[in-house]
Image (cartoon, rainbow, N blue to C red):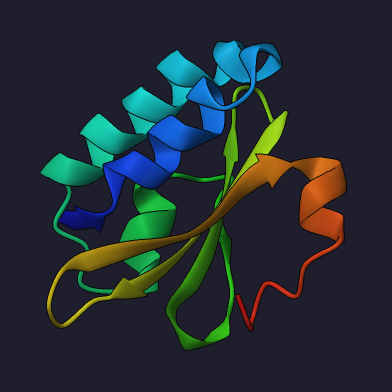
Length: 100
């Protein structure tokens, strides 16, 4: 899969020292996703059992033992993953995951 973009993920932990603990879990997700070849939401669910599959290609991943949430939009036909949001649960609760 192609991931757009790593810089968004880096900005999350670089921008706030208290989020340094997200570095390794996010990079582990990133490396795994780069090697993936997901053609459907079911294939995402096979790789990440705790992922929440939403409508219109949106997927929510729990990161760092469920401390953070990562929301992506996946274009399965082109094998592209777009980072839409990464943040704490409190930040996640304030967004509309379908419109970000």
